[in-house]
Amino acid sequence: MLRTFQHNHQQTQSLRNAEMVQAVIQAHRQIQQLEAIRLRERPCGEFSEIVSIKVAVNYGNYKNRLGAYHAPMHTFLDFTFLRTLPIAQVRNGFAELIKISSCSHLEVFELLDKHCEDLIENKFGRADGSSAELRRAADIINREGIYEMLRLESPNLHEIGLDRVIAYGHTWSPLHELIPETPLRHGHAISIDMAYSATLANQRGFLSDAEHLRLLTLFSRAGLSIDHPQFDNDVLEKGTTAILKTRDGMLRLALPNPLGKCTFLNDYTPEELRDALRKHKEICQQFPREGAGLEAYVDASDTGYTDNEASGTTVEETVENTPVATKAGVNELQGTEKLAERVQVHINQLNGFTNGVH
Image 1 (tube, helix red, strand yellow):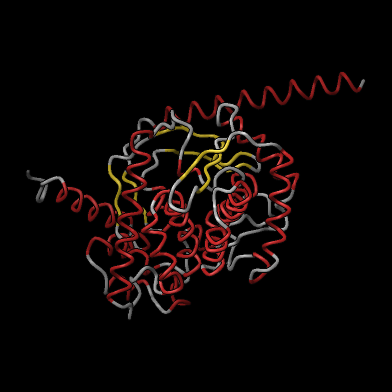
Image 2 (tube, rainbow, N blue to C red):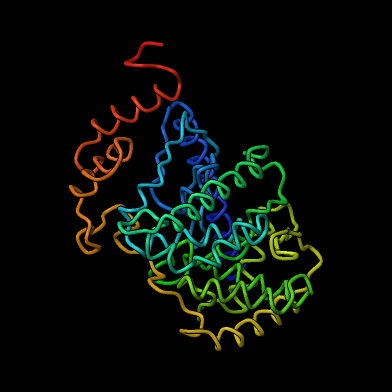
């Protein structure tokens, strides 16, 4: 009877999986018929997703497990949007810049380390009263970080090559991001992954003790998580098993080696991973909040509904004090038609059009 039950359960699960695959295929066919303009107003999007052409959904406890590739017609980017965001979202995006810089751009990492708290508090120099020095540093960070993403990912938009530098922090985070009852923000989830991976890199001799401490300290100063109680050996094992399926049977673990450069680790043992996790948790106990992050869990601001008055900036004030291109983004709260018109004007100008005439 038990054998029959197991057989029936496997058949049911296979049918569900087949139905899910068919649903994804049908959704992709519909998406291919859409022409879209991508607007990026949050740091996670501006610093990382700006290059991606993936469209995906979560499946079970796994982040972005089902999806396809569909490139937008244009991507609209304006750093002035940052002034409209709560600090928690700025911190969330800061993690993406640590990801890019610690494995591929040491100059950006140095600037993040130098200006960490000011960058977050003053929204990358876009908040009122920001100094000219901070604004210049933020502009270098933003532009160089995005350029590095373009350099690394543009030749590989469909991810045919699986050794990806920007996958640093994305090996175990797709699982533990969604395990808590209230999900972790993406930036905090990848920070936990990156911090643990840095400990593994230190254990391997890729990062010196000083570099390892410097990297973990930067996460902590930024208020980003470097550990979580539910990140344990069981999650480590399940996350490893899951990621092997998406990386053609190899771990392809991106690690800083040394800081500012990257190497990929494949020759690991489960014992080594568990030992590194034990060591990492011991280290995290010495950090503020025992490695926990500030405002680490998703809330209403992750859906786009933000209490701007709580941060002292109303929608009307933001519209009044920002450039026309940015006003279009803010006016989305008041009317999507106006947004579409202004964005189209902006795109026409970029393409050499004026009032629809070339």
